Length: 314
Image 1 (cartoon, rainbow, N blue to C red):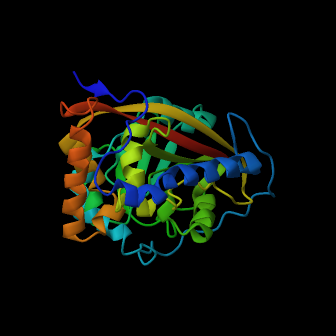
Image 2: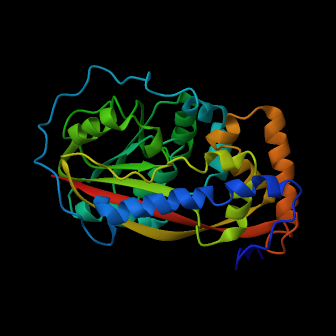
């Protein structure tokens, strides 16, 4: 039986850990800053923060979706599209249901999954609605079409959505929010959303309360470089949206050492590293996991959490 991570991590004994100690906790400091932003008025767990101006007018669709806004680093995902589909976790049914709750009673519910990748979030949303899945990467769309054939898949970006105005009841985004050029993407999202529609930003992360995996990622010389970056915690901010709500859902992910390494291998910071760095990182992670009873058997349950940020279009 896979063993779940439980309790605090043991002190690190890996060679070189002391040199990384100054970086320890960088991810948690970033999360703390995000939580401080939440408390300062952007959003509150389970409650609403009022503010903003009336909605902007609906504008016609652009002549064509653009791909120029996709950064070189974001284009790397297509090189590992199959591994992404096989090893990235899905999303809890409860998270998808809560994201769509404000529009759940609409007839013929139509949802746009923006930056859909290989369709992980698309699968969860299809239980509730018709889904159009948009992504700029052809290789990711090949996987999406093969794995989620019920969804309508289309090439496009958040900054040039290939849909007419006021055509969807909800826009969801899983793991892609931080890749968007938000000053350009948010007006596009507003354009395609019907009045009263919902925007939901959905993200999987390691459970911040479980130190085992986080301790390694915070301290390792390669992964710690990402610790100060925002990766999806910025809430939607646009005059057309009202209150932003936030809720977290447990998302335990049965896995093993090989799949964990393959999952991390689909992260952009590891894709962007040179082959020598990637190989060294894999060896360090294998040694780390082999040294803990929770993971030494090779199979375990990774305690992920899914965070949903939700806002309604005025």
